[in-house]
Amino acid sequence: MDFCKLCHNRGLIIEGNLAIPCSCLPQKALARRFKKSGLPPYLRTCTFENFDFKYYSRQNIDLSKGLSYFDSARLTFQAASDFVAAFQENTVTDGLLFTGPVGSGKTFLACCIANNLLEKGHLVLFVIVPDLLDLIRYTYDSNRSPDDPTEQDLLETARQVPLLILDDLGAHNYTEWVRNKLYSILNHRLNYSLPTIITTNINLEDLEEHLGERTTSRIYQMCRPYRLPVDIDIRAVQRQQRV
Image (cartoon, rainbow, N blue to C red; front, top):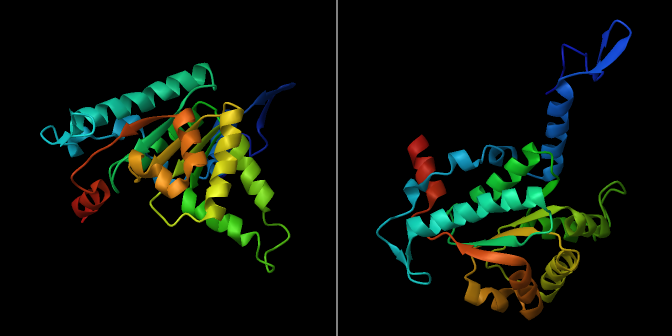
């Protein structure tokens, strides 16, 4: 919301001798929360109402769970919905780990949680893991502006925000430096009972190989795992439908 015709962006409407808060204030507060959340604009439309189960097969079976892809998606969707309710009642709650192949709806569902809680006034930070690591590396650049955030700024924000969403913890080449940064964030959040939502295309049994024992142990302690199996790339299918 750019300009309010009622209060002319003063935030107050004068009626006689009274100054009344303008109705635009909650909308502006919400806009600020979305801006601070790190959610890209195209993900702000992800809602539970828009989650489409048609992409999850009722015939194909996820052998790791003995459930159809559809039933696995229903369980994961319910877990996300339950998380929102639990977080609103008490922010000290278990986080969630969404696993599944590329284009399975993991990020969409994580953003359903973020958008729902942002609408209700909660602080949420959405971080794409490779982007966060690039930002941290950039803090070491001698040509960076003095106004740019420091490594400590970035890490402390991720450590302390009430709800952190780590998106795309993918099967990359995790060096010891990367493992240490992720461990620093997750260990702090575990110690202070701050919930974290994680999406990854790494299978549960392979997490330790990529992230190391310490970080994997913290994830198991703080997050309940759910899997979204699909036999298609939902994003690719949706692009084709829009053509």
